Image (cartoon, one colour):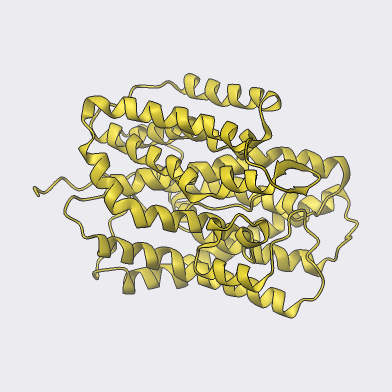
Length: 389
């Protein structure tokens, strides 16, 4: 196949990963940790759609960047090797930390949504197949955020075939394909309302299997990944429609205004994917046209590069800290927020260490040739997952 020009770097997308990761970590630290109680705790739960939307953003971003950096003629085995060394070592590190935590503690973790601790959950989580089991204790087991890595593993397995199909879509039909995907994604929460199952938590009016279907089931989340791929193809072919910042902002405002009047499954925010795809497209175009100023800053890019380490390691750290302060810490509001912000800062610091001294050396040593894999300032890491609330 003829050679194609090397893809332009898109550093702002790397920084955007950190923004998404922060939404996830904040929701976990402030609400899922159970540090607060009463109306304040319930108020913090209102940030759930933002965290869930961040996960959707990562799935879209993953499809976008993998398509952007793809070079025709690349071997599937080389692609899978790079993805393996990108996601599995950090996953194994965090999984081991969670297993050790549960092995040395006896009391239940006093959190709003404690992870499952069964041996089957440990095995399924280790091999990243937990999302195929519609059991909350399995797909949230041990290191809960790894559920989205299970989705990403499925996406990566299919990507070599999907990219061939995506590149064969006629240019004049790309917009129609994008629109069709967007419509199906927006309707999926309605489909999920018909899935029966047992209720899990008083604060979550969605049954177990309905939540699994709309939030965890890999074939459903694959739609967002493919949407990201088609978005990248639209930009590559110069056919992405110009969408103003006002139009994108109005889409988000409309989504949140409608949330109280639509099924609770919409709060899982996969339906936010089309608007997030527009944000990612606008950010990429701004990089290509040299219009970005804030996102492509060295500090933000460094944090974005460590975002996978942040999201996959912060949950075991949070569980350990939550266990240390006891089931009823009785903290004043300001003390609770100080604890949350300190824990977030510690998580970010840990992620930078893990990225620099663990993730990046392994990638350079084992992911392929002696040169760094092609990256738009950073290859897309799996979606920073957040525990299904």
